[in-house]
Image (cartoon, rainbow, N blue to C red; front, side, top):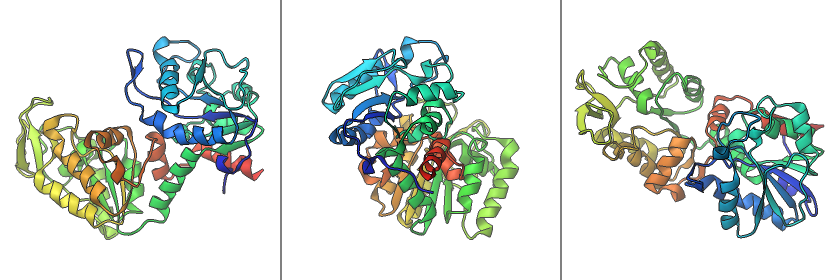
Length: 392
């Protein structure tokens, strides 16, 4: 089922409410990473070129619902957005009672999570939001997996609702990589725990030709293959599940490769002394913090031979300089590759920035949880709502 797209609508003189994901890090009243703000600029420029009067909605952090908390105010975001957009961005603290906005104006409304009923998708709150606009634009892929008043509820309450360009591009890129991939297809999934990504791994095995796991997830697979992981972070109660996934991969003609060498240390610290170990030589008092140089070469060759690459999560503790080489090798291999590549997840985005490989990737998703839920095959409530209202 399809949905309406903002680029196809007439917006001149219309009050256009746009839900974006401006949940950015803020320190001492200043935005410290403007990546998500920059991502929405094309949508805003398009709406302005169409003559819209813009009301922007977003959340920030996890405040206590119904209570104002200055540390979660979007006011610093308004200042940053104003500078990047190159025009005045008016900030409105109390906006539910109504906001006067003219064509060509941009108004950023205070954190939607300060409103009681937001997380519970309160119908009255959603209708109040819908009454403030002529057109509602859902453009926040990062929150599309949450059925909340400012995401799913207002889509159903608005007189006209559509998907914004950023949301549409996210969905188009994910569909291309998952449902119409150039083969061979590779997924790289890192993270601390198998338990948080067990369903994702299982779903991916039905689609990919090769699956590389990294971080604490890889440690569980290493243990499942019969090797000692010492003091490494892993989940012994999920070894059986990991073994099942390895068997499933082989049964389908693919594999989940186990590192042949790893980087270890005796403490989890940026100052810890790294040592290269064969995967069968990890001592009882050591912990695995990265893949080794031989494994980095192996994985880079797999990436080079792939037609499609999905990347979610680092393969080591890349925040520590001594243990960043593995994730850097993966990032740079994807950058060099001719494959269609899509990356998502907070740590992945941080690694992309750290290693300067942004221009080499085909698409970088702004979503974390939504990215994973889409990969799992779960319906995204806000997208379902857009599809259903378009079909009415």
